Amino acid sequence: MSADTVLAGLDAIRPDLEAYYRDLHAHPELGHQERRTSARVAERLRAYGYDVSDGIGGTGVVGVLANGDGPCVLFRADMDALPIEERTGLPYASTAVGDDGGPVMHACGHDTHVTALLGAARLMAQAREAWKGTYVALFQPAEEPGDGARGMIDDGLTGRIPKPDVCLAQHVLPYPAGQVLTRPGPALSAADNYRITVYGRSAHGSAPDRGIDPVVMASMLVVRLQTIVSREVGPLTPAVLTVGSIHSGANPNNIPETAEIQLNVRTYEEDVRRRVRDAIVRITRAECAASGALRGPDIERFGAFPATVNDEDTTRRVAAAFSACFGDRAKVLDLQTASEDFSEIPKAFGVPFTYWGFGGTDPELYARAAEEGTIATDVPGNHNAAFAPVIQPTLDTGVRAAVVSALAYLGNGAG
Image (spheres, rainbow, N blue to C red):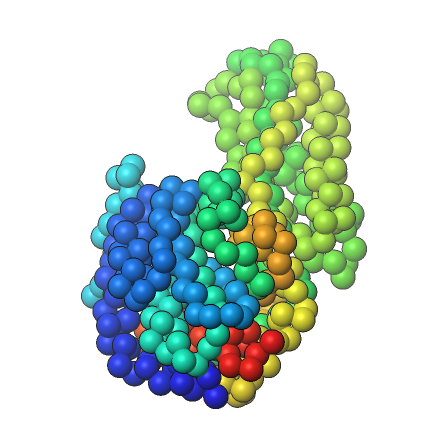
């Protein structure tokens, strides 16, 4: 099998990949600041024989390896970290700071994604006799702020590289290390952030009748907005609405003029997404009117992510390859309420895609937590300061999945 031929080189490169991962974990960079990471990625890709384009969308890097006639497969890894202070206790824990001086940590596992794709890119280059076509390794900046994929596209990505026949991506998740998990159709939710400002009239706290209290308006909004999911979305339709920020005033004895709330909405279907948005606008305007606000609210949507809806044929093809490679460690991915901007890339090319998860948690720790019903508290998830995928078998699994999925299209005899 072509996968066996390509993966035969994994044992030899494993120590180098593990060392690279530790270094990358210790040197995280925030979105749009991935200067060290992208430079080291580009250096490696060139050493492997790839035609490299860097600086796309700021810090994006793409390596292209043409190997005769055949399909073109694009595989994407995201590079950026998060503004979180690491609390893993690892000997290679991050002490890095961002451009603003704040702490930075690879709390979402993007260091795992980068290392796995570099490993796959190296193995594909070393075993060209095992496949035909073109392999594109794309390293994307700024997934966390949600504009990295769009930035590469706006910087001419589709004109700089060959058009792929299919796009692939993966994400490490708090499942047992060694597992790979696929899901056809909706996999990740769309996400929409809203900033709502309501306007009142300031007054002394001893004379509330002289003012119009925006704090009360905002407080009523927080409660009323929760009824959108509970009363306007069907009970079998997934949706989440979270108010994560509320701010108003500067002292306890004054009614302020304004209040601001910020909320996040997660949905999977465009119709539901639209209905929730319309309900937010309707309820906010009505609450302000009921409070006698002197002017209407400001409602701003920002930081939106599209839903990730996997192509069913592509997912079945990759899932079959995973079953052959991983056996009973190939699982079905639960519907995820996280969000991604990866799908912007295949959408720009007009090609199908699939996106899957692979586990990064110590299998024994996960099994104990599952038995005790404490997964939520004992297994750190993505964006947690204690999130730390075990290096192995996590890296091996990520590399194998990246190779096997590509060879489902590029392997000798694949169509």
